[in-house]
Length: 414
Image (tube, rainbow, N blue to C red; front, side, top):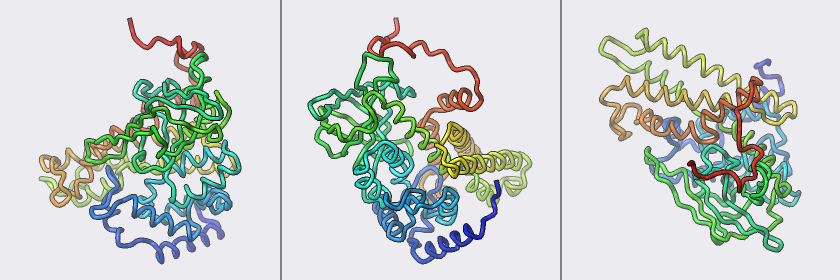
């Protein structure tokens, strides 16, 4: 790939830079610069409210969901122009956090499987931030096996009745709509009896319970469904074809997470450049420099691997399993970097108060957040299997339940 801007791309970059300089919410720049690892929040403002204001400003200026068609709220831009925008948006891109699932996962699924009326009704409001979407996939009994879900949808006239539970649903507590995968036929193998819907999160029978995290944040939720009625018009794809529909969501998820996931390297490099150890600056220590060099190489590899995905998109291809690489490497790297930074801080690493802790307690927050990064969007083990089987072409794991009807799969050991 040629990473130099073409004349057209250079003009686009200049236009984006000028618009951001004139419109960005500069009052939050300093605070956003300190929330890049472990947590994204503002001390005196609601992050979702501020994010919605910025998203609306961008939407009015034509700078949201750039690669989407104009009729659906986008700009019709190229994938490369989308990357240029993200580069120029810089620190303000952290305000896209509440919209990432809608933009990066739900929106593309609605675009691929929704009716034309669905697309024109929902996509522009996803793009503008007026309506926030979440993804209702994971379940307590399923673990990393998405197809092992037990939330059931039963046909009832011109609609469906849904009962069950989802867990680890990011943003459910402030979402307006959700993408919901259910089991509609337990008499066939688990991948074949699934059906995808979307639903209003304020529907009767939907209950959202936030999960308190170790880092003090509340980004994940349990969601319970009790006799929730969903019209059949809100089904995406054919009945029983939910697994294929979900693959569109999952492939876009890996690309969305892998492309935006902060690994903490820039913050660690700056930290080591300013930290004084007993025998001098940390940056002069050979062991520290060796670690930094290793992470610098990985960080560079992550960047150019994500560009490979952009190149594929520019050719009209669907995001592929290669995007699992970015998420797998970045998640583990974030945890390793946070642990190393805490070790360098010694006893002061226990301080979490931003007013007292080194670099505002960023690495403490990052360490507490990092385990969830390695679970959300596919665990490390699942991603390694995907890479091994679908990228490297290695033999697949033996799956004894692959062709067994779901209701015949044992749920308890002997």
